[in-house]
Image (cartoon, rainbow over all chains, first blue to last red; front, top):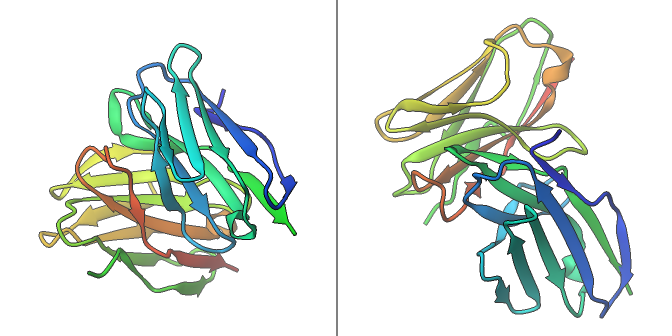
Length: 111
Length: 113
């Protein structure tokens, strides 16, 4: 089983839509969780950390469910500029130095 | 402030050759990690270094090695290159536990022919 699994993409949505990405992780001892965004042929960039209580940053909301080992990212009012691949990232539990990336979910926002 | 800098940006090597990739972390970051990203997949962890010591290693063969220097910069070395080593190699710097996430460099795109 992969350490981090994400919804397969691509997600094709119109501008203004709300879209949700899901991610599951296998190590119950994982402590740090993040969402990264990666544009085509560019490096991943940190979008937001994910906290147990859930957190919001503008149009983006991240949630963590430790019991189900599940992370989500919600994007409201999608913009064309949101088109990218979204990567779920989880640290390796007791090996906190090792971070595992999901394979990413591609989002295409269309006019 | 400069971000994470990597060199070279692109590289073409032939099978069996050796390659050295370089990384300079963000000022103040003492931890450097290396990742390999093959097209269509997420980055795969190779190594993490902190205070010049290896703190984590991924599932890569011994042909892959790395080191960190006193100024916290780092090198990734790959020996006996295979076609399958063709990938984007990403360096990331962070605070020691990575609690605040990584900042990645723009990567070195390695093509092995």
